[in-house]
Every structure is written in C-alpha cells, then in structure tokens.
Length: 204
Image (cartoon, rainbow, N blue to C red):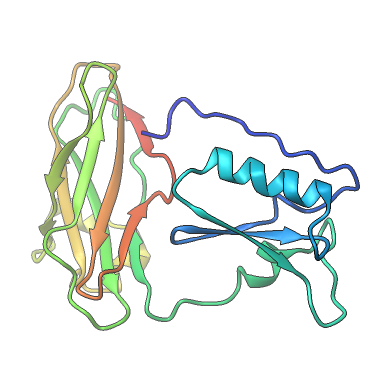
C-alpha cells in the first residue's frame, strides 16, 4: 500500500545522474553513461531491477553531442513531453476532518482526453490501520451542483461538473488516520491512479 517506504541508494562515484530516470508504464528508463555500460552503469541498472521487480529496466545513452549531466539528464529532458491522450484525474486532497464527522466526501474529475469513454465507475480505495487490505467505493457522477460539488476547486468548476465524480468514505472513530487513492480507466485501456505512488491521508 506504499508504506512503509523503503529507501534504495544508488552509488554515483562520478556524480552520475542515475536517479534522473523516467518511470513510464511498466518500464524504467535510466541514464547510462557509457556503451558498453561501465561498472557503475551496470551496478545502477541492477539496483533498479532489484528495487522494482516486474518493471523492464532500460539504459539509455545520450546522443547528438548532448551528454547526460548531473543536473540535466533523462527525466529533465522528457518531463515536458505531453501525453495529449492522457486519462486525467484531478483532485484536491482532503485535509484532517477533526470535529467534522463523517462521511468524508472525495471529489474528483476524471477526463479521457483521448475522447474515449471513462470505464464506469472510477474507484476510491481506502483503508486504515485497523482494516485488512483496501476497501473499494465506486464513484458516482456528480451531475447536480450540490453542496459538496460547490466546494470543488475553481479549476473544476469551469468543467461544469460534466466529468465530476464523488464517493464517500464512512464515518470513522475520531483520530483515525485514513489512507485513500483514486483509480480510473478508459475504454482505450489506459489506467491511472492518483496519487501516482502511495496514497493521500487525513485524520477523522
């Protein structure tokens, strides 16, 4: 469920930018300094393989006279390339709800920029320390601008709530730390989770 976090350290004897990598779907694209790979390159790639089983680890050499630098490498150079067909989830995380009482309403917009249909329904997955595993709550389409919907951030309001969804986590004992995330998919088989890694959390 993303916790506890495990910190993995990668040796960079010459300040190599191995951490300036890109995680894309089930692949990890890692800066590689030499071809064939140096001993440090191979050690870094092995660290990724050990830390991220199930992912394909790929080393990439810089081309065209623009070598990788310790302050400018693979992630820095591709992070601005847009995915114009992305499945976009937008959500303002809940802050602590002390004294508010439940249920706790989760609001989000889910937009398939590809033009495909959002697969019904997006899910809120939640848990807390006293539970076994994660519970799933299907999200409803927020078609009416009710009290909760009017509390959407301004950037959501401009969508007219055509792509707005809500779900409610049941009331919990005061002081309970609740963890949650949002999952969605569209008919092009794209899947997204927000946050990308780990979870949001708040206290009841």
